[in-house]
Amino acid sequence: MKNTGSKPRTRKLLASPLAALALATGLASSAPVRADCLVTYADCVDAASEESTFWRRSAAGLRCYTEFVSCLQRRLA
Image 1 (tube, rainbow, N blue to C red):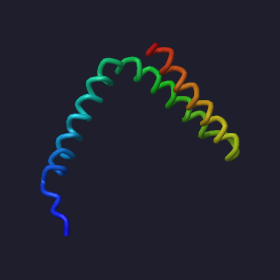
Image 2: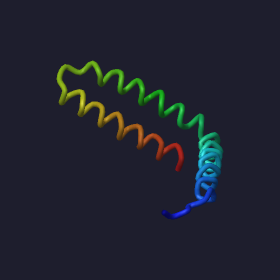
Image 3: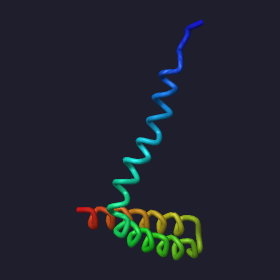
């Protein structure tokens, strides 16, 4: 049996908080932008959920998603 020791596990435990900190720092600077796009997306998905058929709801949901991504791209550019 191979002895792996505790070093790989320690690295994994340290990597997660560091990655979360880096991600939080990057997201905090764009929080107002994301909030605006996210509110618009939530409203769109709410309206899409009221469509009459599965296919219409699906198409409307895809439109909401593409508009959300487009909004983020415009705001962050």
